[in-house]
Amino acid sequence: MRDHGGPGQDSKEDNGYESLEYDCNYFDFIHIDPWKKFPSFNEGSKWTLEMIEFCLSKNPKMKFEIGTEEAIRGFEPEELESLMVYLKSNLSKEAFFTN
Image (cartoon, rainbow, N blue to C red; front, top):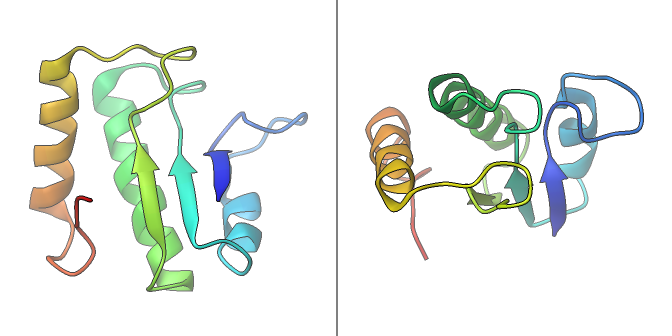
């Protein structure tokens, strides 16, 4: 599993996509975590969706962890629910799965 995949998670400033592309070849699970660079709920949600779609284009079997980094950005239960609803309504049924 790759922990903390996303923009601003490396020692150098980046948008996260280069490392995600690499990670899709070697990991089964990726923690999508754009919140360090994009703490606003709307912007972070958009980046979460786009990064999931990007990773699935590289590895359709990839699974994801989202919205779980309390040290970077805490979430109220209502925000987590909104994030899940947003992703479910914007991802294909095959891409969205909760487990």
